[in-house]
Image (tube, rainbow, N blue to C red; front, side):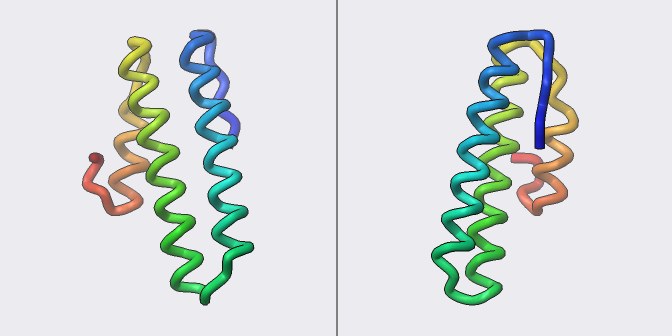
Length: 79
């Protein structure tokens, strides 16, 4: 996912979070261990990603509702 934003600090945080997410998803796939194990690791990477975006948005005075919704969709209740 590419997140672009006029706020440079938030944009940089989004790019960094996306890089981390991609690395963690790749590592989960390479590590293998069955579909349930891979799915759990990918889900954990997605949660970490959306938390980073949410935290950056809040820290930079930007809209964060979409990140809370993504976290709810991932089963965290928005946290």
